[in-house]
Length: 406
Image 1: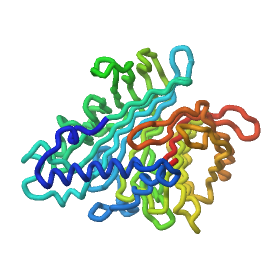
Image 2: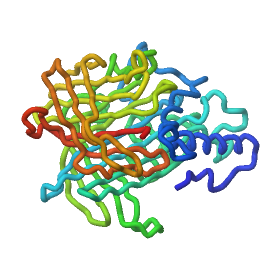
Image 3: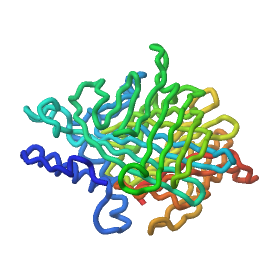
Image 4: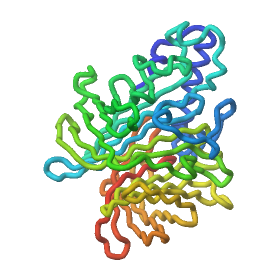
């Protein structure tokens, strides 16, 4: 699916430049070109370039809510990212993802006179991309959409094609909507959310219906990662602002291949924004979010490259049942791929060992189903995983794994 602006090319030089920039951004992020191991990671390495004119994430910034639930158009990249481990009425495991990505095509202050959003419906400096996925056994349904907006549009505008506003919280692309149900003025708007997103039957393309209608109820606090919400991503110091709501109880209906299931389970919502997520020598990442049966949560990621002496860069958060969080650095967290699976013409690590010695945690984390490739414009692997004790083999929890740049 191509973004709507491309379907009706504008003629002014500025609009032509905008469309060319949009195409270049998509091509770079997707790593287009010859399908080689180098080209597969190229798009994610590009997240370390082109930062001039954008605000840079740093530890001096204090996060505040609900304001930071909304968009940050002065930063180059941002996302609202939900995963959920669910079961249907028969106890069959299901997984889902919904992600809204925002990418600034150019710094907002560079918009030329006469190209403000009120002057033309084609003025845009923000590209939006949304992904949906539902998994059940060997089934894996994926959908993707694009939109555009302008950073100078009114901050509380909710009738555009895509956007995100903080209060009352709403993030959307067309009729894919994540929205708050909280009306109390002093409450966190992430405490109760609804998510509605459907694709397929009825859209004129003849596809089997795919999607969900869910309620998300937080049973714990927001969690700030890294240093008070600044998550370092390489030894040279660059990083992102990053927090999560990892305590969602999820209930609702999920439709896959035209069949609807009542579901319940646990969800994890990530919020992250930056202008340089990766350093130029980093090709991609491996990211875990785990719900352990004893009430703990674990977030862990490995960035391939960018560490001391050119090695990998690792970081994570050990989260207690009450939300108390311990930051983990590369010396306190070990992530070792143990086995790979052939997926989409690639060898992707789907069995891992995760160790947090300070918490006496030694896990084998494995994907029950390897075919979870997201064949989207920006391709990556993402799917459900099961965590087991390394020594005894007993099941300790479930979660999600995302891997990019393969």
